[in-house]
Length: 360
Image (tube, rainbow, N blue to C red; front, top):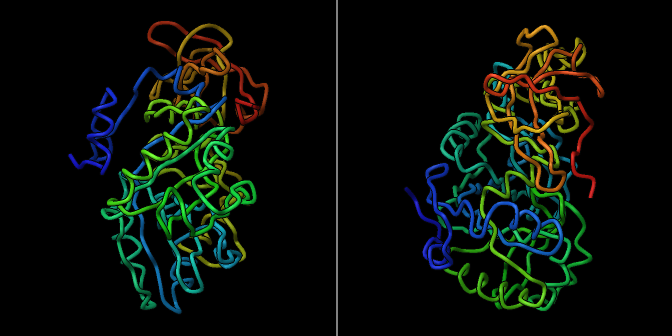
C-alpha cells in the first residue's frame, strides 16, 4: 500500500484507514453522517492525494488532449478547468478526468487513483504528436476543502479573493504561506469549495493552517465514505461503479461532455450511438419504502424480470431515504417510472427521479 504525505496525520486523528486504489486512505473519522452534514452545512477537508496528475506540454499538447478526450479542450483559456472523459476504442470509457489549462501549451490532467497507470499508458500510446508528458502523481498532494463556509473560512490564508474564483476556474497563487499553489474552484460534493494542489513537502503546513483558519467555522477532516455519499446525492458518476471500460458516455448521461465538433477516439461510433439512442441509460432512483440499495443489486420490473442493476446506492444522509443509480432500458428511464430493487429476498418499489437528488 502507498501512503499519502498525511497518512500519519490521519492516524493521529483516529481515522479508520482502509486500502483504496493502492493507497492507505482515511474512510471515516467521526462517522459518515456527521462528516456528510459538516460538508453540506459548514466546511470539511478531504485528503485526496491519491489522485493522479499528468502534465502535458508543448506546441502539440492540445492536439493530444483533443484526440484522447471527449470534451472540447480548445475552449479552455488559461485559468479554466474542464470535466471530460477519455473514450476507448470499443465504446467504453478509459477514465473521467479534469483538464486544467495552466498556461499556453501547458495542461494538467487529473485522473482517478485506480487508473493512474492505465491512463498514463493510454495517453502515451496515443501520443504520436510529440507532446511532452510528465507523471507528477507521486510528487503532489491534493486537498479538497468543501462546503458553503469554505470561502469565508479560507480567505485569511491567501492574498487572492477566493469569492472571485468562479466554478471550474482556478488560480496559481499563495496559500497558507506557500507560493505557487493551485487553488481550484472544483470538487465532487456539490456544496462548493476548493481543491488545493501542492507538493508533498508542503501539504502538512497547509493542512495545519487550514484547520487553524477554519476552527471558528467548525471545520473537520472528512473521509472517503462521506465523499461517496456526497457525490451520489449530486448524481456524479464514480469510475468503477457507474462508468467503466464497458459503459459509453452516451449511456452514462455524459453527452454534455462529448463534443462532436472535433474528432477523438471512437467519436464516429459514439455519434452514431447518440443519433440512434443508447440501449441502456444511467438513471437515478429513490426507494419508495425503507431500504438501502447497494451496488450490484438487481433492478426488476413489476413481474420480477431483471431489467438492470444498481451501480451506486446508499442511504442518503440529507434525504433520509435510499437512493441509487443504475442502467436501465430507455422504456424504464423516464422520470416517474416505477421500478423495483431486489434487496436480498425483498422486492422494494422505487421511482425514477431527476438529478440531483440533493437540491441544496
